[in-house]
Image (cartoon, rainbow, N blue to C red):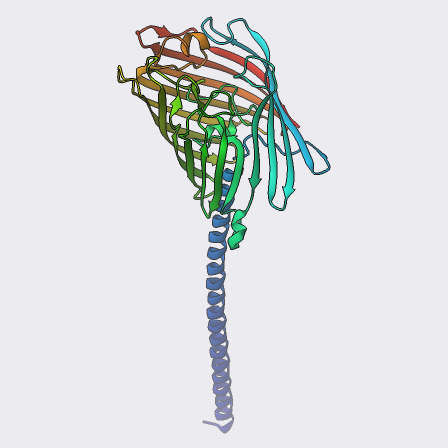
Length: 429
């Protein structure tokens, strides 16, 4: 082979070897970069998982805190200030009509609710709150009545360096049984009516509440007497409480318990807790000097951006000390409610609720108080409500409702003349 050809071949081979060396180096560099990129992606993925878990935890804690905050069932934001004192109000005005056996058989215009709220800081984390009731659906006059009034010792758990774990209220508070009472006022209630059971009441006492991660709690010891809202004629106190669990911002669960304590039939007359549009009262003869009721309830709520579904069910047991007869009663009740926004302003809502009392109990419902609380006992009653509402703003709304109510009295007679129609403008400022 000529010398020139040998040199050319040698140069070409050397060039190819150099190219292969460069290519191998480039491939090795790409592999290293790819490995580094994979590690970065894994690190970012782990960080994203951690962040996602943190966000879910914060959502759950916020949901639990919001549930605890709703214990101020009457308190409203806004209003106006005079120095450190904040004044606000809410209420509803409307038109109601029921069947001939109902509470409004003559097509009434009425002030359904009117409440004035007063809030003020007292010292450090101690606050004053009061609810003055100018008009309520349950009162048959227009006299001024005292609703809630208490001192709120917030964040007492700061004594051991923790926020929101332990708070104390003393004065007149809502009885913390069930959850319907927290959305019972006209502005918060998507419908005009309430469920048939409609557990609620205001009673003097002491309440403890707080939040522990995804859990929140409230417990109260109160007088239990419904005589005048001030004096208690029996030393046996009412005890009520609730434990709630919020796994995330969409789900909420709670369990509640209540005992009215002994209530004196001839001095206290009725319990402080409202039930069935009446109260727990004595079913015994005049010889029965004391009565009581115990109850337990479970609540569940599912929320989404434009609405919610909530349901609860419970059991109440009545007893007294009548020496002549066994007047004990087993009472079962439940309710299912749904609300759905149609757009930013319109919404629809529906609720179905029912009560069973096999031996009969005073369950008023939409009925006339004289007929169904002081008169005949009811063994079964159900209510189906459908409503539509329009929210002009967070401070003004309009809603309309029609409700069917049917039941059976202890003697077998039917209850079927109490259907309700109402329309109401609700407001707050």
